[in-house]
Length: 140
Image (cartoon, rainbow, N blue to C red; front, top):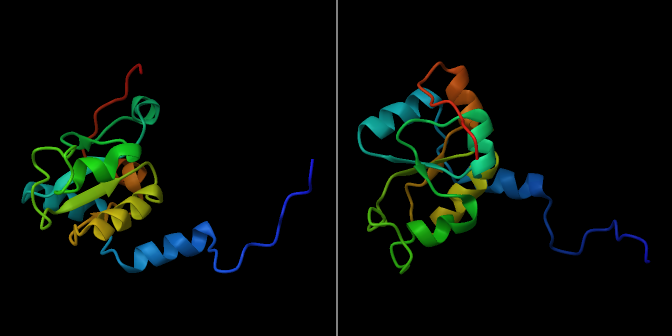
């Protein structure tokens, strides 16, 4: 077995650098701003896996699209898109558990052309801490 390579390849970025770059493109929203955006018609998307939703709970009205299929379900050009994903002007707010994966996911949606994609700063944990409505988790 060979020793691990600890020197990063030229041009590679750390996950912290990738996350920081993604966040420079986003207008991240706090929980109360997300609630207001959803009230005016924005789509809130929960990208967490089923086990995490079952353990922590959910935000009422959030559309469940797990991270591994997000781009296919929201790209207006995709044959696998959801019916409401028919416009590049769709306001999409992505959330995960703590607001890290959602930043990367929202930046990926912007790469598809969904210019109004962003995320919930602090994720589900921040939503719950803000005292906003949640649905308890259940068995997977």
